[in-house]
Image (cartoon, rainbow over all chains, first blue to last red; front, top):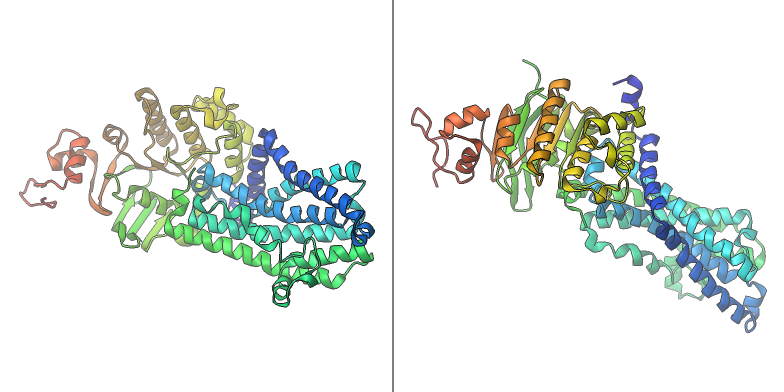
Length: 275
Length: 256
């Protein structure tokens, strides 16, 4: 065993092992065109639905008429959050469905490297899904979310990080409690939908609900989105709130996943998972 | 005397009230092939899982290559590998894709050449482009063996390596394991229910029952001690807790 290989094998975080796992997920994605289609299908259906609602409401409501892109931007950015969470949780479940987890963890792969690979592939899946829908919106509704400019990068980044954090918690729970808990992957994020002010300002929520919303990075992102679209102003204060909260969320998501991984090693769940 | 590759001291694993492994201690000598035998639920798979670091023991100490597996498993894992018919590889990936991913996980160089050589050695060259999920049980076993040998492991842990294989394929696997050990000097620890396999491959046998280590010795020594013609009869004697009378007339086992 050469020194170089030994050092690489024993390093705390090996990019090569992260890349190996990302390659495994890309192989999976590449092999199945229905999976790629599925990634774009729901974001596109949602976007078309809200596009026509916008067309309808624009003729009835001055607020929508002044900012016709508000619902389309909201639905596309919500899908960033949803797809990024799903990208982590579903891809993790692939390992459980294929009874591959114990094979992986008798190799030098560390849990944190698996996490980095899951985040990477989640980014790829989210970009495929949401960019596909965003591009379809341009010819149908003459609206391009890319016109948001640089703020779009801030919104996208914050939402994808929040989705990762929730995805890691969900994956940890599924690892601990088995595939019987897999439906959590589909509904967990929707509990946050009414609290995040995706389609309406946070101010319409009751006071005590607003207090909860304040602790969600997504609510700051969607408030920021409305400020850009309606007022043409980029709210740095909202961005800072979202970034700080996301740092806490991501650390908590990672810690939760690693905790459940340790619990699974104690309880034997790494051996028992399967279809 | 060389240091044993595996040293297990007072290993204990409980799941609530269930005792899966009950205070067992043993060593596995470098370069040996050792069998871990016992009936269903005897604690073989649990013991293997602890050795692999997949399962944390309730108490006890496991040392592999002189390293504490609980504290330094990442120093040890690159030097060992594992195969079992009860775990799978991703079914939708081709054999080559699966092996490529694992080769990268082990940090191996010249992956393509390595896979071509292994494919030729294990007679799976014509399977490399096929989906793993579409292979027969025998083909999957050979692919799993290829995965287990990717990193030229110094320690190979095998859980029933020939389970559900036809006699021809099973013989092929056993021959390959014998040749591998001869060529590399690797240590092999295998759990098996196939007693002829144990007699053929193993220098040492560890007998488990209800989580306890109840006997150990070479296959020849166990045959003599139990006065039996083959390991299957010895296995049944131990599993059913039959009286063992040593040549000196002393009881060595529990009478049921």
